[in-house]
Length: 224
Image 1 (cartoon, rainbow, N blue to C red):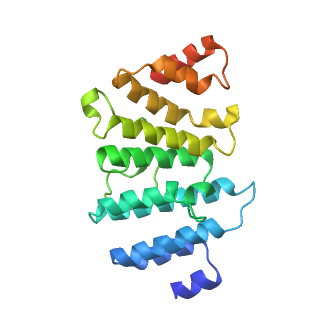
Image 2: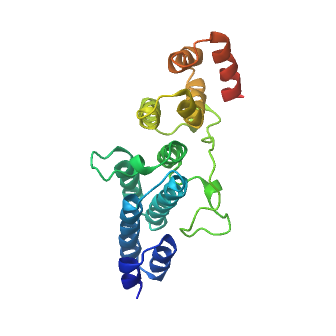
Image 3: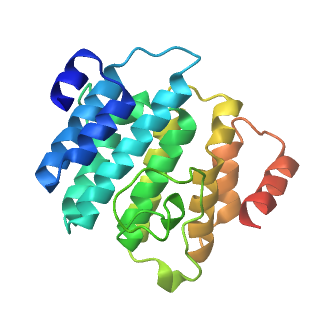
């Protein structure tokens, strides 16, 4: 019945019903893939683009969470990589708003570092894959240099890729401000690694914040 419904009158709600009726990992993963295709192909307008982007974000993270829940860590990594870096025309990140792209990139880096998705996205009383409970930017919980698990240069390269992905289509000041969570996490990492934070900040911001006083003020906001 659900198969007929999603074929002739597909909605996000009906797709979720279809997904909830599947019991196996393969069945759920298959429906997730079809849901993502449906969401990417759905017609979008200025009025609903944020909603469709959120639905894509939610479904991608659900699919990643499903892989992690069933012990398929490498599959979860591959899902993020295909969504963010694939050369295919079906790449998911192209259908996300800039703020949602930032969240996906940060979630990917969080997964690499800590082996899971940010806990603040979900109900702490429910460990099963589920819908997002909260959508907001976050700081990756690095406190000391010892907390950094992955190769630091690899992590910094990921932040570079993330910023490029989020600003390549529109490098306006407005879009770059939306990317502040990426900049902030990258600068915190640089600080822990005792790299040259202000030099990094200046090189990343001078193109749209030429006033060095403003850059230093931004540094204080980002780090504290």
